Amino acid sequence: MMKRSWLLWLTMIIVVVFIPLKVDGQPAPLSFWRQLDALTPTLTAPTSSSQSTNQQQTTADGKQMTPTESIVSDKTLSPTYYYTFASGMTASERSVFQRAVSIYNATGIVKLIPGSAGTSDNAVTFFVYKKHMDKSQQGMIEAGHGGPKIIQRLGVGAYTVNKARAGLNVSYPQYGVKLSVAIHELGHALGLDHSSSRRSVMYPVDQGETALAQSDIRGLKAIYQGE
Ligand SMILES: [Zn+2]
Image (cartoon, rainbow, N blue to C red; front, side, top):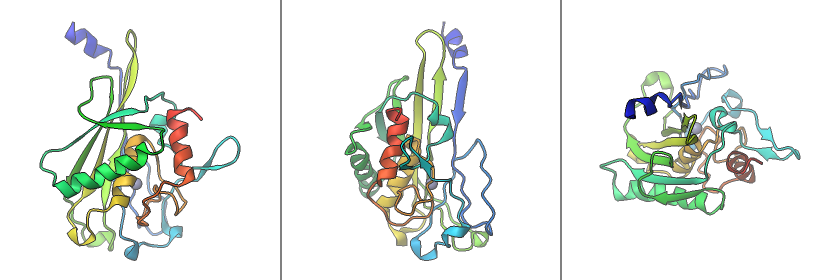
């Protein structure tokens, strides 16, 4: 029986966000496997013209909307998530993710609950990692990465679930563990893509923004309320 049920896992899609930030004005290649996400401190941010950002989308009534990851845009996802922390994280690292969770919960659109998820529940795993940039990155620092991972079970008992991850690069303690980056990476985990608006928390270069823009809220509604 177990083997048979595994055959029903017909689709397993991993989305990774890979956004090399400074590529001499060339758009970054977007591949299906996208998970590395580069963000930098504002001081070293290149101008917006050299950024690879997605187009700002609009809602049906013409309002700006933060784009959504293509793999979640045609899915029906529950707004409820269970979140856990990877082992070995410090209290301050956990705290910054907790604050990001509070900001998303305050929208009333999604509901993130501490604890382990069941097989058919959405989940977010928070983690930290260390990645040093080499000279070729030209001063760009990857501050974190994150993204959704959609699993669809078809047939009897069908469901679609997001087993997402959001991580912070802690190799550069001089920049601290930034709430704005945690919000950005959790946004990816929940299905938001990059925005060309600097006021969006999903702008690809860290602006220190810790409040969701109206366009971000519309993006979340598009994913979780089908609006
Ligand atoms: Zn990003």
